[in-house]
Image 1 (cartoon, one colour):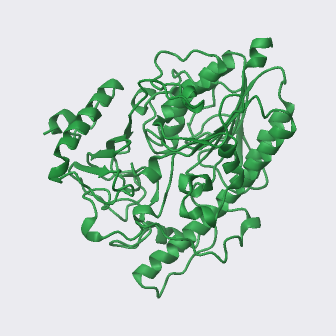
Image 2 (image 1 turned 135 degrees about the vertical axis):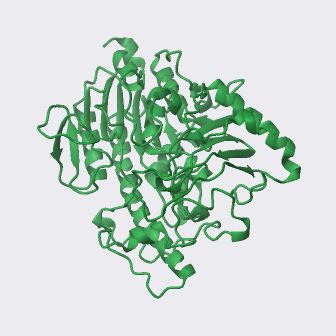
Image 3 (image 1 turned 180 degrees about the horizontal axis):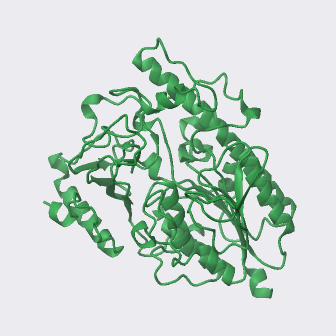
Length: 506
């Protein structure tokens, strides 16, 4: 290709699944001292760490669609885990491919249709397996599959994080050197059920991880909605989902035995087991990120390659007694985002501007010299990464979690987050007939509001929605939430139990 293509940066987009910022030592959580991630940290040390990168729908499939389309879920058509990516959506990968980039993706795809806009791809079916995983490659197969009915399958021996990295490195070594590249390395880990590389069987054996300060919350202050539902570590009423998972004979890391333990002791033991398995899978990601960074440096690609490390959303690691994501709590909804680009991004910098994942596509198109389609709702944060906040930059993030039929017992909700406050409307849920958690039937719940003052309550422990001191704040945030709802075109309230925001401003 010509000089224009040579001058454009390469883009390496590394994304994991369910990797909480609190499990990356660059973010400075209590886990950092016992489970450091030096290779992932290196990206931020040689570039920038974003403190306020947010997911607009905290669940795997929708987040991936948000990233590729630059659109919120109600417009890109991917609201839930099972929605396939519509054929008429314009994707970041297609725009880069059409502009002359060599494109490839290896690892988790999870959008239920054949990847588009990629010259080369090899992806996991659905969630994929940790060991000896199936991969889907271009071609035809005699079999059909319920969720991923395309391509041809084959098995690769080994551990999935290593394999995805091998595929990434092999492609880098064989690519067309005359083209800039857009390369996606998408890890399955650390998604449940946290099957770690057996080489890491005994790391952390002598460590007792600090518990999050909100693991045991005062029952008197538990909130109307968020503390009544969800997947917990403890046994609030019946045996917790986490304990059920860890005790099953089919649990891949071996069943746990919590018999004879008092309830609090059981919770502490379940938390430690969860952290051991989760952080062992993270260790493999960290090591493999190091392999890729070393190759970029050794092959002369460092200076002209944008390297991003992120996750499709965060993950609750015992905070508020939860494991899983979906919630609008910071630990779940905040995405890690570390980026290195020596030509533009100052090293060892941090930024507190509000970014969300519909901004990813416009930003990467900006770097590539490609105009964003007018329908994209995100905005390029390239100036932010260079250290210059644009005038009129967003002061809030709009969020909507759509799975109103109680998947893992998390009610659907709208929310707005500013630097200082977080307001959430849980608008009701009921048990899906297809829900696999039939042991815990759920009745409809009335809509409920929660408000957190992040200035004095960064851990989100106290709902001040009914506190008279916050009356004006509540009204103002409801108005802002409704304005964002209109701004982003989220006006199709399809569910009869949903009460329109305009009717609840009083």
